[in-house]
Length: 96
Image (cartoon, rainbow, N blue to C red; front, side, top):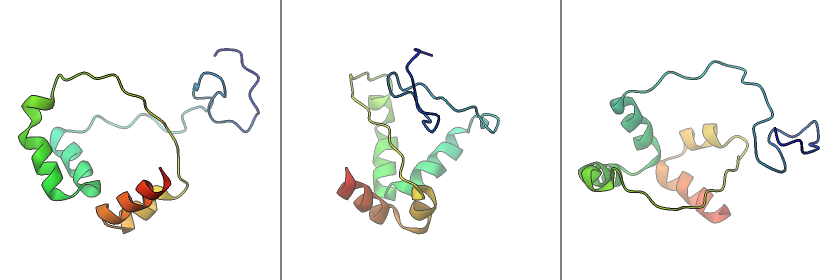
């Protein structure tokens, strides 16, 4: 998109970060609120999820400037599904 000379093996542009691969599957359907909560609860302790939901009205609409780093750990999804949320968090916390 920006014209940067990327290697054919790149999945994302080395200059602007634009996705260089074509989607192999159609976009997933929009999840219901309950489905989103079910997914969140897989990776967060139950008490934390409940705390977030109880303060939802305070959180919604809040805007902050943040810095985000996107990265991929090969095999992490299947690993995190086998581990509990605390163990998965500990692994990520050690790396980042």
